[in-house]
Image (spheres, rainbow, N blue to C red):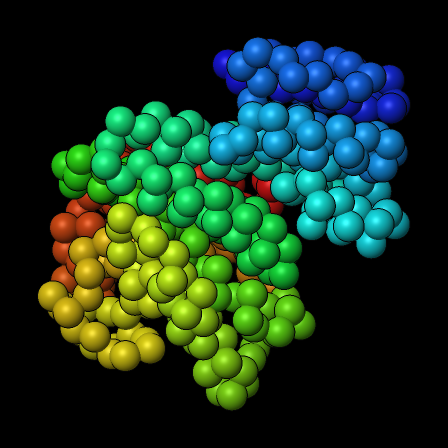
Length: 328
Protein backbone atom coordinates (compact mmCIF):
# COMPACT_ATOMS: atom_id res chain seq x y z
CA UNK A 1 0.00 0.00 0.00
CA UNK A 2 1.67 3.21 -1.20
CA UNK A 3 1.65 6.37 0.90
CA UNK A 4 0.22 9.29 -1.12
CA UNK A 5 0.25 12.93 -0.04
CA UNK A 6 -2.90 14.76 -1.14
CA UNK A 7 -2.51 18.55 -1.32
CA UNK A 8 -5.65 20.09 -2.84
CA UNK A 9 -7.18 23.47 -2.04
CA UNK A 10 -10.76 22.25 -2.49
CA UNK A 11 -12.01 20.17 0.46
CA UNK A 12 -14.73 18.45 -1.57
CA UNK A 13 -12.17 17.32 -4.13
CA UNK A 14 -9.92 16.05 -1.34
CA UNK A 15 -12.77 13.99 0.10
CA UNK A 16 -13.64 12.55 -3.31
CA UNK A 17 -10.08 11.56 -4.20
CA UNK A 18 -9.51 10.09 -0.77
CA UNK A 19 -12.67 8.00 -1.12
CA UNK A 20 -11.48 6.79 -4.55
CA UNK A 21 -7.97 5.88 -3.43
CA UNK A 22 -8.16 4.87 0.23
CA UNK A 23 -8.94 1.22 -0.53
CA UNK A 24 -5.60 0.79 -2.34
CA UNK A 25 -3.32 3.39 -0.79
CA UNK A 26 -2.52 5.18 2.44
CA UNK A 27 -3.79 8.74 1.92
CA UNK A 28 -2.36 11.67 3.88
CA UNK A 29 -4.17 15.00 3.49
CA UNK A 30 -2.20 18.22 4.01
CA UNK A 31 -2.22 21.94 3.24
CA UNK A 32 1.51 21.92 2.51
CA UNK A 33 4.11 19.49 1.23
CA UNK A 34 5.78 17.33 3.84
CA UNK A 35 8.79 15.02 3.63
CA UNK A 36 6.91 12.08 5.12
CA UNK A 37 8.66 8.75 5.78
CA UNK A 38 7.99 6.24 2.97
CA UNK A 39 6.19 8.83 0.83
CA UNK A 40 5.61 7.42 -2.67
CA UNK A 41 3.58 10.07 -4.54
CA UNK A 42 2.25 13.63 -4.23
CA UNK A 43 -1.01 14.81 -5.83
CA UNK A 44 -1.63 18.56 -6.20
CA UNK A 45 -3.97 20.86 -8.06
CA UNK A 46 -2.96 23.92 -10.09
CA UNK A 47 -3.59 26.41 -7.28
CA UNK A 48 -1.42 24.50 -4.83
CA UNK A 49 1.26 23.88 -7.47
CA UNK A 50 1.49 27.63 -8.11
CA UNK A 51 1.83 28.38 -4.43
CA UNK A 52 4.21 25.52 -3.64
CA UNK A 53 6.38 25.29 -6.74
CA UNK A 54 9.64 25.91 -4.85
CA UNK A 55 8.56 23.48 -2.13
CA UNK A 56 7.90 20.79 -4.74
CA UNK A 57 11.38 21.18 -6.19
CA UNK A 58 12.94 21.16 -2.72
CA UNK A 59 11.06 18.02 -1.70
CA UNK A 60 12.08 16.15 -4.84
CA UNK A 61 15.70 17.26 -4.40
CA UNK A 62 15.69 16.08 -0.78
CA UNK A 63 15.08 12.46 -1.80
CA UNK A 64 17.28 12.44 -4.94
CA UNK A 65 18.48 10.32 -6.64
CA UNK A 66 15.27 8.48 -5.83
CA UNK A 67 12.35 9.59 -7.97
CA UNK A 68 9.40 11.09 -6.07
CA UNK A 69 6.54 11.51 -8.59
CA UNK A 70 4.21 14.51 -8.49
CA UNK A 71 0.82 14.34 -10.24
CA UNK A 72 -0.97 17.58 -11.11
CA UNK A 73 -4.77 17.70 -11.46
CA UNK A 74 -5.79 20.64 -13.64
CA UNK A 75 -8.89 22.09 -15.30
CA UNK A 76 -8.80 22.04 -19.09
CA UNK A 77 -8.73 25.83 -19.32
CA UNK A 78 -5.61 25.88 -17.17
CA UNK A 79 -3.58 23.39 -19.22
CA UNK A 80 -1.37 26.11 -20.71
CA UNK A 81 -0.41 27.33 -17.27
CA UNK A 82 0.08 23.80 -16.03
CA UNK A 83 2.57 23.00 -18.79
CA UNK A 84 5.07 25.29 -17.07
CA UNK A 85 4.90 23.12 -13.98
CA UNK A 86 5.48 19.98 -16.03
CA UNK A 87 8.84 21.20 -17.20
CA UNK A 88 9.74 22.54 -13.76
CA UNK A 89 8.75 20.14 -11.02
CA UNK A 90 5.58 18.17 -11.89
CA UNK A 91 5.95 14.84 -13.66
CA UNK A 92 2.48 14.18 -15.05
CA UNK A 93 -0.90 15.87 -15.30
CA UNK A 94 -4.47 14.71 -15.50
CA UNK A 95 -7.18 16.95 -16.92
CA UNK A 96 -10.62 17.25 -15.31
CA UNK A 97 -13.20 15.86 -15.44
CA UNK A 98 -11.54 12.59 -14.51
CA UNK A 99 -12.74 9.10 -13.73
CA UNK A 100 -11.69 6.91 -10.84
CA UNK A 101 -10.23 4.35 -13.23
CA UNK A 102 -8.20 6.97 -15.08
CA UNK A 103 -6.83 8.39 -11.84
CA UNK A 104 -5.84 4.97 -10.57
CA UNK A 105 -4.16 4.12 -13.88
CA UNK A 106 -2.06 7.30 -13.85
CA UNK A 107 -1.07 6.69 -10.24
CA UNK A 108 -0.07 3.12 -11.06
CA UNK A 109 2.16 4.34 -13.90
CA UNK A 110 3.96 6.82 -11.65
CA UNK A 111 4.37 4.28 -8.87
CA UNK A 112 5.91 1.86 -11.36
CA UNK A 113 8.52 4.46 -12.24
CA UNK A 114 9.08 5.06 -8.52
CA UNK A 115 9.57 1.30 -8.14
CA UNK A 116 12.18 1.35 -10.89
CA UNK A 117 13.98 4.11 -9.01
CA UNK A 118 14.06 1.96 -5.88
CA UNK A 119 15.37 -1.04 -7.79
CA UNK A 120 18.22 1.00 -9.21
CA UNK A 121 19.02 2.51 -5.83
CA UNK A 122 19.17 -0.97 -4.31
CA UNK A 123 21.91 -1.95 -6.75
CA UNK A 124 24.47 0.17 -4.91
CA UNK A 125 26.66 -2.83 -4.09
CA UNK A 126 27.09 -3.74 -7.74
CA UNK A 127 29.93 -2.55 -9.94
CA UNK A 128 27.45 -1.06 -12.40
CA UNK A 129 25.83 1.15 -9.75
CA UNK A 130 27.20 4.49 -11.01
CA UNK A 131 26.12 3.74 -14.56
CA UNK A 132 22.65 2.71 -13.41
CA UNK A 133 22.19 5.85 -11.32
CA UNK A 134 23.25 8.14 -14.14
CA UNK A 135 21.10 6.30 -16.67
CA UNK A 136 18.10 6.34 -14.37
CA UNK A 137 18.15 10.11 -13.85
CA UNK A 138 18.20 10.62 -17.60
CA UNK A 139 15.50 7.96 -18.02
CA UNK A 140 13.04 9.68 -15.69
CA UNK A 141 13.48 13.02 -17.44
CA UNK A 142 12.84 11.42 -20.81
CA UNK A 143 9.95 9.12 -20.04
CA UNK A 144 7.83 11.36 -17.83
CA UNK A 145 8.19 14.70 -19.58
CA UNK A 146 9.28 14.53 -23.17
CA UNK A 147 7.61 11.84 -25.25
CA UNK A 148 4.24 11.47 -23.53
CA UNK A 149 3.44 15.19 -23.34
CA UNK A 150 3.74 15.38 -27.13
CA UNK A 151 1.57 12.32 -27.72
CA UNK A 152 -1.54 12.46 -25.51
CA UNK A 153 -3.32 9.65 -27.35
CA UNK A 154 -0.65 7.16 -26.31
CA UNK A 155 -0.27 8.61 -22.82
CA UNK A 156 0.93 5.76 -20.65
CA UNK A 157 1.75 3.55 -23.64
CA UNK A 158 5.43 3.30 -22.70
CA UNK A 159 4.59 2.26 -19.14
CA UNK A 160 2.14 -0.42 -20.23
CA UNK A 161 4.52 -1.81 -22.85
CA UNK A 162 7.26 -1.94 -20.22
CA UNK A 163 5.02 -3.90 -17.85
CA UNK A 164 3.95 -6.34 -20.57
CA UNK A 165 7.56 -6.85 -21.69
CA UNK A 166 8.68 -7.55 -18.11
CA UNK A 167 5.93 -10.13 -17.59
CA UNK A 168 6.73 -11.81 -20.92
CA UNK A 169 10.39 -11.90 -19.92
CA UNK A 170 9.53 -13.33 -16.52
CA UNK A 171 7.46 -16.08 -18.15
CA UNK A 172 10.47 -16.83 -20.36
CA UNK A 173 12.68 -17.30 -17.30
CA UNK A 174 14.82 -14.16 -17.56
CA UNK A 175 16.72 -13.07 -14.45
CA UNK A 176 16.09 -9.87 -12.47
CA UNK A 177 18.82 -7.88 -14.22
CA UNK A 178 17.39 -8.79 -17.63
CA UNK A 179 13.90 -7.88 -16.44
CA UNK A 180 15.14 -4.52 -15.21
CA UNK A 181 16.69 -3.93 -18.62
CA UNK A 182 13.37 -4.77 -20.28
CA UNK A 183 11.57 -2.32 -18.01
CA UNK A 184 13.93 0.54 -18.83
CA UNK A 185 13.86 -0.32 -22.54
CA UNK A 186 10.06 -0.41 -22.52
CA UNK A 187 9.82 2.94 -20.80
CA UNK A 188 12.05 4.46 -23.48
CA UNK A 189 11.20 2.52 -26.63
CA UNK A 190 9.10 5.35 -28.14
CA UNK A 191 11.12 8.32 -26.90
CA UNK A 192 11.97 9.12 -30.52
CA UNK A 193 8.39 10.32 -31.04
CA UNK A 194 9.58 13.61 -29.55
CA UNK A 195 11.10 14.24 -32.99
CA UNK A 196 7.75 13.75 -34.77
CA UNK A 197 5.40 16.74 -35.27
CA UNK A 198 2.72 16.60 -32.57
CA UNK A 199 -0.08 17.26 -35.07
CA UNK A 200 0.90 14.06 -36.89
CA UNK A 201 0.96 12.02 -33.68
CA UNK A 202 -2.60 13.05 -32.87
CA UNK A 203 -3.99 13.17 -36.43
CA UNK A 204 -7.38 11.43 -36.75
CA UNK A 205 -8.19 9.27 -39.75
CA UNK A 206 -5.83 7.70 -42.27
CA UNK A 207 -2.33 9.02 -42.79
CA UNK A 208 -0.56 9.36 -46.13
CA UNK A 209 2.41 7.28 -47.28
CA UNK A 210 4.72 10.24 -46.68
CA UNK A 211 3.35 10.73 -43.18
CA UNK A 212 3.78 7.03 -42.46
CA UNK A 213 7.44 7.22 -43.43
CA UNK A 214 7.87 10.24 -41.17
CA UNK A 215 6.32 8.33 -38.27
CA UNK A 216 8.77 5.48 -38.86
CA UNK A 217 11.61 7.90 -38.18
CA UNK A 218 10.89 7.68 -34.44
CA UNK A 219 12.97 4.49 -34.22
CA UNK A 220 16.04 6.21 -35.67
CA UNK A 221 15.44 9.32 -33.54
CA UNK A 222 15.11 7.22 -30.40
CA UNK A 223 18.37 5.44 -31.15
CA UNK A 224 20.19 8.73 -31.69
CA UNK A 225 18.90 10.10 -28.37
CA UNK A 226 19.73 6.98 -26.37
CA UNK A 227 22.99 5.74 -27.88
CA UNK A 228 25.10 8.13 -25.82
CA UNK A 229 23.51 7.12 -22.49
CA UNK A 230 25.73 4.61 -20.69
CA UNK A 231 23.13 1.90 -20.01
CA UNK A 232 24.19 -1.61 -18.97
CA UNK A 233 21.50 -2.95 -21.34
CA UNK A 234 20.98 -2.46 -25.11
CA UNK A 235 18.29 0.20 -24.58
CA UNK A 236 19.17 2.24 -27.67
CA UNK A 237 19.14 -0.82 -29.92
CA UNK A 238 15.76 -1.94 -28.55
CA UNK A 239 14.32 1.49 -29.43
CA UNK A 240 15.87 1.09 -32.89
CA UNK A 241 14.65 -2.47 -33.48
CA UNK A 242 11.24 -2.78 -31.81
CA UNK A 243 9.43 -2.49 -35.16
CA UNK A 244 11.61 -5.09 -36.89
CA UNK A 245 9.92 -8.40 -37.73
CA UNK A 246 11.29 -11.94 -37.81
CA UNK A 247 10.58 -12.32 -41.56
CA UNK A 248 12.32 -9.06 -42.47
CA UNK A 249 9.10 -7.15 -43.15
CA UNK A 250 9.67 -4.61 -40.37
CA UNK A 251 11.55 -1.32 -40.22
CA UNK A 252 13.83 0.63 -40.23
CA UNK A 253 16.45 -1.87 -41.51
CA UNK A 254 14.46 -4.97 -42.42
CA UNK A 255 16.34 -7.17 -39.96
CA UNK A 256 15.48 -10.89 -39.82
CA UNK A 257 15.43 -13.58 -37.15
CA UNK A 258 18.59 -13.68 -35.03
CA UNK A 259 19.68 -10.31 -36.41
CA UNK A 260 17.09 -8.81 -34.05
CA UNK A 261 18.08 -8.62 -30.39
CA UNK A 262 16.09 -10.92 -28.07
CA UNK A 263 15.02 -7.89 -26.00
CA UNK A 264 13.72 -6.16 -29.13
CA UNK A 265 11.75 -9.28 -30.11
CA UNK A 266 10.06 -9.27 -26.71
CA UNK A 267 9.38 -5.54 -27.00
CA UNK A 268 7.85 -5.99 -30.46
CA UNK A 269 5.28 -8.44 -29.06
CA UNK A 270 4.52 -6.23 -26.05
CA UNK A 271 4.18 -3.15 -28.27
CA UNK A 272 1.72 -4.82 -30.65
CA UNK A 273 -0.43 -6.11 -27.79
CA UNK A 274 -0.68 -2.70 -26.12
CA UNK A 275 -1.16 -0.73 -29.35
CA UNK A 276 -3.94 -2.95 -30.72
CA UNK A 277 -5.82 -3.13 -27.42
CA UNK A 278 -5.80 0.65 -26.87
CA UNK A 279 -7.47 3.60 -28.59
CA UNK A 280 -5.59 5.59 -31.20
CA UNK A 281 -6.61 8.86 -32.88
CA UNK A 282 -7.03 7.07 -36.21
CA UNK A 283 -9.12 4.12 -34.89
CA UNK A 284 -10.93 2.80 -31.80
CA UNK A 285 -9.39 0.09 -29.66
CA UNK A 286 -9.38 -3.29 -31.37
CA UNK A 287 -9.43 -5.21 -28.10
CA UNK A 288 -7.19 -7.67 -26.32
CA UNK A 289 -8.49 -10.80 -28.05
CA UNK A 290 -7.78 -9.37 -31.52
CA UNK A 291 -4.30 -8.37 -30.36
CA UNK A 292 -3.64 -11.91 -29.14
CA UNK A 293 -4.96 -13.36 -32.40
CA UNK A 294 -2.54 -11.12 -34.29
CA UNK A 295 0.54 -12.40 -32.48
CA UNK A 296 -0.73 -16.00 -32.51
CA UNK A 297 -1.44 -15.95 -36.25
CA UNK A 298 2.00 -14.51 -37.00
CA UNK A 299 3.90 -16.56 -34.42
CA UNK A 300 7.30 -17.46 -35.85
CA UNK A 301 6.82 -15.36 -38.98
CA UNK A 302 6.55 -11.76 -37.80
CA UNK A 303 6.95 -12.34 -34.07
CA UNK A 304 9.36 -14.41 -32.02
CA UNK A 305 7.69 -17.73 -31.19
CA UNK A 306 8.99 -17.96 -27.62
CA UNK A 307 7.89 -14.42 -26.79
CA UNK A 308 4.45 -15.05 -28.34
CA UNK A 309 3.97 -18.25 -26.35
CA UNK A 310 4.85 -16.44 -23.12
CA UNK A 311 2.48 -13.57 -23.91
CA UNK A 312 -0.42 -15.88 -24.74
CA UNK A 313 0.17 -17.76 -21.50
CA UNK A 314 0.13 -14.72 -19.19
CA UNK A 315 -2.89 -13.07 -20.81
CA UNK A 316 -5.08 -16.09 -21.46
CA UNK A 317 -4.42 -17.49 -18.00
CA UNK A 318 -5.39 -14.17 -16.41
CA UNK A 319 -1.91 -13.64 -14.90
CA UNK A 320 -1.92 -10.21 -16.50
CA UNK A 321 -4.69 -7.91 -17.71
CA UNK A 322 -4.94 -4.45 -19.22
CA UNK A 323 -7.70 -1.86 -18.64
CA UNK A 324 -10.72 -2.25 -20.88
CA UNK A 325 -10.94 0.21 -23.83
CA UNK A 326 -12.33 3.57 -22.73
CA UNK A 327 -11.66 3.02 -19.02
CA UNK A 328 -8.72 5.42 -18.88
